[in-house]
Image: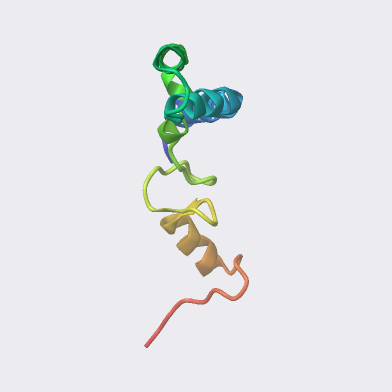
Length: 101
């Protein structure tokens, strides 16, 4: 099990990224548009840098929903490889069986 503080910190980042998503998107659109005057783009860049760092989507880490493990997490299932194996061995995932050859 991961440290509760690390899980809480990641949840905080997730909330912040959702909160500021639209604002960041608008500012980035202005910054990337070459038709907009340089002064306006510079102001947009400054506004973007004033936003909290943790509001960036790239700062959010994919963590296992069961254990909180940060590595080896399947994106589609949102659980780690270890938790997936454990659930599979317990028979809680339909169609998943232990391989043998």
